[in-house]
Amino acid sequence: MIYLITGGSGFIGSHLVEQLLRNGHSVINVDNFDNFYPYQIKIKNTLESIDKIPNFEFSDKESDIRHLISLTKSDQYSLYYQDIRDKKGLENIFKNHKIDMVIHLAALAGVRPSIERPLEYEEVNVRGTMNLWELCKDFNIKKFICASSSSVYGNNEKIPFAETDNVDNPISPYAATKKCGEILGHVYHQLYHIDMIQLRFFTVYGPRQRPDLAIHKFTKLISEGQEIPFYGDGNTARDYTYIDDITDGILKSILYLEKNDGVYEILNLGENQVITLSEMVATIEGALKITATKKNLPMQPGDVTKTNADITKAKVLIGYQPDTDFQNGIKKFVEWFLRKRH
Image (cartoon, rainbow, N blue to C red):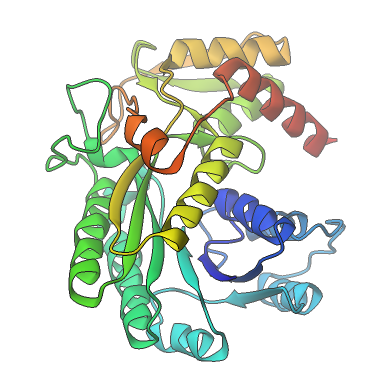
């Protein structure tokens, strides 16, 4: 099979690329190496995902990415330095390859930055996604997986969150763009018979996690003896999901789509285990054997108080079965972090 993956050099994308290549498939990676975090991290992710030793000599972004493209080109793997907002550029990629399925992971991420740059989030997460659906329509590609987010639930009072819950009350532009993606995806499914699964990811963590996300950020600050920003009273809680479980959920969604027609489904992918902010910090402290210094701050606009995934539907429909508890997941993450640092 030939899979086009957007965001294939990112955190989740690079893990998925790695697994698909190991399983003998071909991958077209479309990534724009956005400046949201250092591009060098994405280059290392890319090299690791295709099993090349990441001893890369960096100079400047444009030449580094050109070098990466030439270094990684093979019959099984192609990398395109491409923004999904550029429909013409995307069209050239679709013309060059016979694509069996699109797995759309690229997005402008982050709740707080979306409040500062809402129009840019709309351009990437809504218009960019629609460009992909338009091309799927034009090139008769009938299988599509799309990354949604637990943020669509907002401050849902019903726990755990189920796919049938009302999600009409997002509290950030980022969450709203993800809800738009689900609604517009259903339109393309209805009008053009594109089989689709929308995956609501719940706070993914693990090796290669983005440096701006709490677990990575806190681990770095604690290990360096710096204070960590501690928002609220420590009782905000998240359903943290280990990267291996997320990757497994995507792979099982791929198999389900390949075997079934007439599909439009929304699935939660989480661990169904809720961890408070205080518990998260304590677990990192235990893994590092260092006590954190906390800087107490008020809650941030757009932050939800709690997330918790009801994963019953994913278990029944695709056989999703997460098996990494938080303590073990943090242990694995900290081991990777310390290895990477030295």
